[in-house]
Length: 204
Image 1 (cartoon, rainbow, N blue to C red):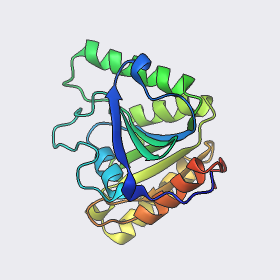
Image 2 (cartoon, helix red, strand yellow; image 1 turned 180 degrees about the vertical axis):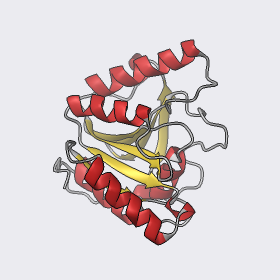
Image 3 (cartoon, rainbow, N blue to C red; image 1 turned 180 degrees about the horizontal axis):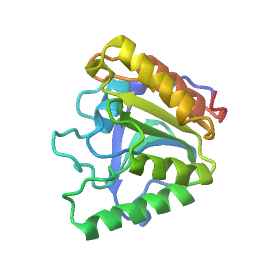
Image 4 (tube, rainbow, N blue to C red; image 1 turned 45 degrees about the vertical axis):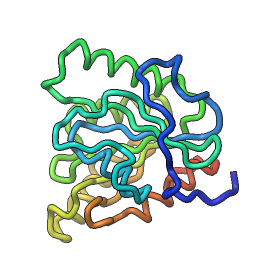
């Protein structure tokens, strides 16, 4: 996989909760998963330089299916349902969780996981559970501290350092500041995705 990826060429492929309908499990893909309303879809749109590739909404829990986007032949991004939205019916939430678990634990083409977290509330209990579980699967993780524009530069950098020192010492994970509206950190995120999708699994 030596061809440079142009993220702006991303296109919608399909969306489905059922494994039988997912894109064929070959090539390479990176998945985005995070707590509802942390800016996951906005991050995908910023990285792909498209305003509405991933559906965004002020209503949490909008992403209810696994959504596949093609970057190149057999190279993809995947938007997973958000977790932790309390107003979603329990049965629906359980179904999402089952499919997320099945996807993450069985998908051979999955090269890494991007977890957006609101910089004002990073590492909630649900985030910690997701980190621990994916670490057991030996999946490299990259954390986007989203909405970094909501804090001063000094405060944002302080949170970044705290996350690096307090949370990431025991994980195969990296972290960065990110703001979709200000396009802060977009190039850094793209560089990480390029490495994973082009066959470099090193999480440095």
